Length: 444
Ligand code: ARG
Image (cartoon, rainbow, N blue to C red):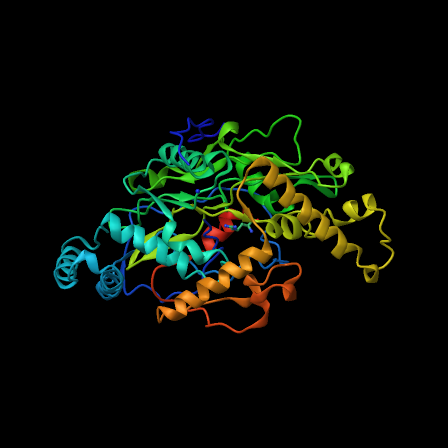
């Protein structure tokens, strides 16, 4: 076990659940008041391969962090713009002017400022509301905030991530939740979670093939090089450990690996409402999607660790994770079990297999009592969201190619229209190039 590696995290309390799933970032303007930083992102020596040139649409264009070690000073104009938005949308918070004066003074004095609880909660909610790739934004106002800005030590970050899993899962009654850790600031960087999501499955190279999730072969290697021992025997659905770098004075110490306790991870075994053979495929998926490597930018303050979750839409699992050729690639096996003619794509065996996989995911989650959307309902809710945003006079950024579901696109109403272009202002989730590389096991 290498130095700085701790295995096993004690989870925190038990609480409980809508659906942020912006999956990544867009370009942002460069720093206006660059400040040097105390310590930076440590880099783990690995012999991982470079990122795959073949990237699915999960891999969004990303932006560099402001250098591996840079922490930017806060731009007072960005702060003011955010405060104006907050006060306009929250009239009960009183007049904005005194707050602007106080924040400008605080930035002058300290190089940064501290969000109030209400500002932070609003900022996180607006970042969700502005996530052009997320179809689940109707309930953006219900995002539950776990304010953990005081947390920088890596073992505490890991423990709080486990706490997030427990509180958000609620035995299946999933609650949209965000945990916000310490921001980058003049006294050092905030902590970082290397994992793309808090719960993901390991991928192991075995001969010319991969056991598990091929997407995480590189990350699995990184975890192992940091001392993680995979279960024995290795399986197709081994939950990866958390890899965390601390913030502030802990930043220089290098990444730590923390196992995710089994009882913090709810999973659903997949079976089909009509086909008994389906269960034999041995498929399962985790209940909670928690994106953990995107930074949250609010009013000039940058929170590099702010894991957030919604609940799944079935097709994310059935038509992408389990179906994509570079993921679990299950369509042929399902089609064979259905005795479909797979001699030509034109028989539509792929399409029919993807539909039955989707039926199995919906049925299994429903039976297990786990929140899960379907692409028809979610599309309708999304159009309600767009209408509400238009009625409020707000620009509503939408990335059509991410909103239209991966099966039956034209059968859903989201397919049949144009939307506002994505923008890059205001509170926003972003994926830095370095965070993206770390999430794939290719630290740069
Ligand atoms: N598509 C990602 C996955 O399959 C999850 C992205 C977030 N999705 C969500 N419903 N909040 O794991």
